[in-house]
Image 1 (cartoon, rainbow, N blue to C red):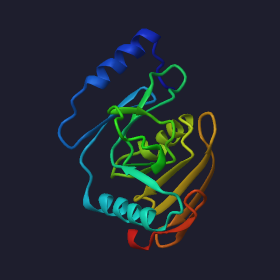
Image 2: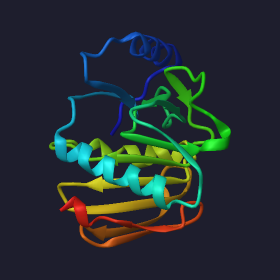
Image 3: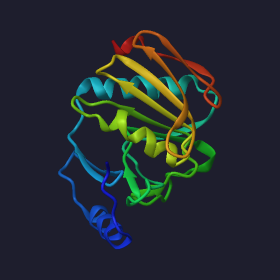
Length: 190
């Protein structure tokens, strides 16, 4: 069972967290009241992101902007401080220009899709971030699970989870619905 924090403790935790200086290359996140520090990614991690980004820019019907490692604030879980996450990738509609002038921790309103590629020994991407992204109302969460050799698209965010998901094994195509409207090729993830 998760520990809950009183409002003053929540405020102090968030203030401390926002001022935290993570070591160079590391990502510090606050998800469901728990602090996580992630080391720099390996080459396969970045390879998967590169392949997705390339396909999104070439094949998506929506004009998108992309940011790697953009800090987002999300609706908090009950009894927890505001979630602060840094997805591996954040996609927004180009016409909104959400990244221009955005603070280091920007609200997630207007974000279309977040992308996570799992790191070894990292369960947060699978077990807690999908709830955080759903609470934030982000329409799509794309999870590349290297340990399971699969790609999952979560959609239809509800209060504390996504209502729909579709998973394919590496090497298969995953249909991305509108506004993307193309099949994501995962062959090169093997």
